[in-house]
Image 1 (cartoon, one colour):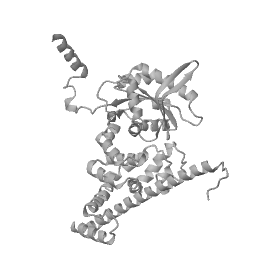
Image 2: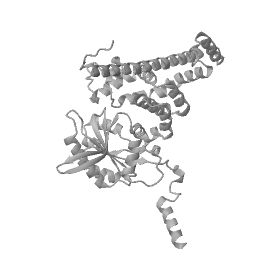
Image 3: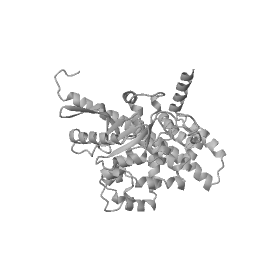
Image 4: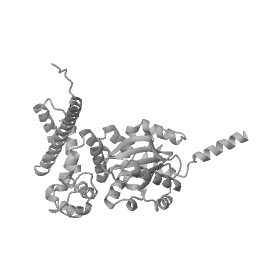
Length: 400
């Protein structure tokens, strides 16, 4: 019988219980996926080792597939094709070239504490495990390189990614560093398979490693935080998902970004939480508005975006510096890190950006956005610009 007496604490109790049940259900689903991936890992390893040490031929895979299906008729995934994928899965992720990528990964600043990423046996005995204190990494990595930790690290990482994602990565990505990049991003961001495929198509890895980032983080932030802020910022952002094929005003660009906020956050990267658009900041009798305001969970900092439909101009840096002063004064919580600004513009000159940011005391990054696919390198400079086409049309009308 449902009690009729008032229970003041009941709504909060029920809400907390629902959250706990959802968390447990999600954790259970992840655990099931991890066990399945590790099962496939072990099957692939077993096939490969038997072929190498016992001289088993390729025909054993067909026989093994038939016997496994007969022994476990209620389980899917034991086709001969999938067993071959399991063998490839283990073979390609356990090569020396791929394992070597784990060591540089371990040198990067982590959002998790060291004991969550590196086995305890690899850590220096006197290591202080406070986040951000990277001075212990050289000692840890030295021990790490001589241990089995790279294989353990990768085995743990691949277990966090669904099998369908692995199949796509094995088919489409060959470079070990690129494959590790997409594995890590999928595990951290929870990318669906379609999102992963879109990121591969957009060249997310190539953009992450090949393009120069422009910011003053190393001047405006402590070293450990500057490294994490640099990791947060991209040199360019792919906004093709907005479907813009004509000139737009800044407010329309902002409208479209907020209308497709989920896709925009996926493009921004891990840890961004949306706070608001046209976020109001008051100073005396005047009001100022930040185009888009986010909070980064791992940097523990507000991140303000200023959208520009044209090229970067030096005065943009002064305006952002002013906004960051206001955010730090009026919105920053006592335990937050300094607020960070990102100026998102159609194009930029790196030298101009460097000089514009030199004297700014707040951390500011400048990045380009891409609304349409880039031309192949061989066609750059060989096709007329939009302005040149417009001039031709105008001239034709005047002559006609």
